[in-house]
Image 1: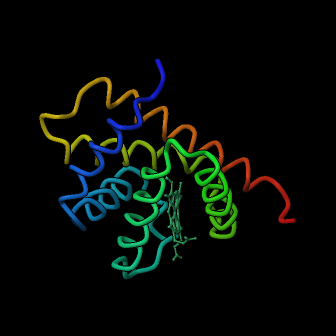
Image 2: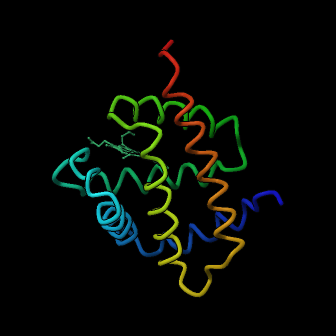
Length: 137
Ligand code: HEM
């Protein structure tokens, strides 16, 4: 079944009403799951919270517009290569993202959303890691 992009947008809009709590929860979950990732990030995380949410918003808003989404993700993937991010890091980040979305969706969370978010994150991670593996032109 194809991903229902409107459902992802609606769900993300609902989750986003929780503001920075979403990013707080995400990084707390990620560093509990994978403590070794903590040192890759700055000590003070406020800025990171903002840029993560902004980037996720950008991704979700262009989820049905590959001409905008793919270049954005390729650039993001190349920059992540520069931060020392490797392909194996994408799984724990995806798990924390899903856990965060589930947490803030509350009763609205269901199997369809879980499947669609998993598929969408899979595409994001693939485009980012593929771009990271290519030389900068
Ligand atoms: C959906 C996937 C991801 C999104 C949307 C995302 C978003 C961002 C954004 C917007 C930045 C700010 C810098 C920039 O724009 O270049 C950033 C930085 C960073 N991200 Fe990600 N990221 C993702 C996946 C990952 C993964 C898998 C890791 C692995 C641990 C990671 C680790 C980092 C690190 C270490 C920084 C730099 C922090 C710093 O030194 O300031 N990110 N990320």
